[in-house]
Picture 1: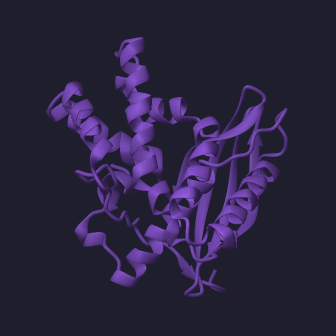
Picture 2: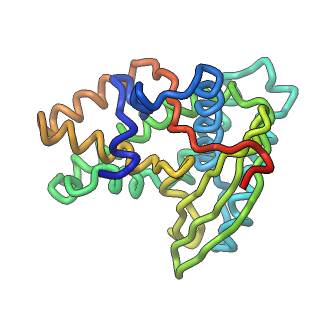
Amino acid sequence: MSYAESSCRWTDDGTVVARRADMPTFQRRSQIYLVVTLVVTIALSFPLVARAGAPTDSLKQSVDQVVKILSDPALKDKPDVRRTEIRKLAESIFDYPETARRSLGQHWNGRTPEQQQEFVKLFADILDRSYVSKIDLYQGERVQYTGETVDGSDATVKTMIAAKNNTDIPVDYRMHVKNGRWVVYDVIIEGVSLVSNYRTQFNKIIQTESYDALVQRLRAKETAEPAASPSPSNGRKRGER
């Protein structure tokens, strides 16, 4: 069993959380939740480009664009407008179908095209409600780019979130080229994959109940308010090796 499988669970409101035994302190939970919100929103906000360029360059462009929206004083007291701007970017940039396919895992191929299409929509709604809706928690955290690996049309961009309490939190973006541009299909926060977390929980529901039961739960989230989603804590104080 992987670290993600043993340490995380999927809550009734659709958010991935650490198991109680692994929960950090309240302050740490708040910080991790903020980071999850920030990095997923960044991943959901890649700008359109005419052709694929260096993955890190594409990521940096998206970070700059998101930070510009979040830092705009004209939008400070207009959270709904800010969220709308972020969602506009998300709808066309994040590879929802690929993320949904990987999250459903072995059960994807057994679904009809209609079922697959519905699942992608429901999964996108979960990501939006669980993370993008909480973007107001952003308080100016800085993103540092620490490395990049490219293998053909796949890449991983490594970053570090410089949090307010002098803690550095590693975040990796898994990307691939689709329709001539780099897009994100997974985000790994402190070694824990967003896709793997959801896949573990989706698989458990399908095996113990059914695929229809999973869909019913996802549909219910369309009107549910997501709770905070801390991740297992592997961050380190700045300067530590």
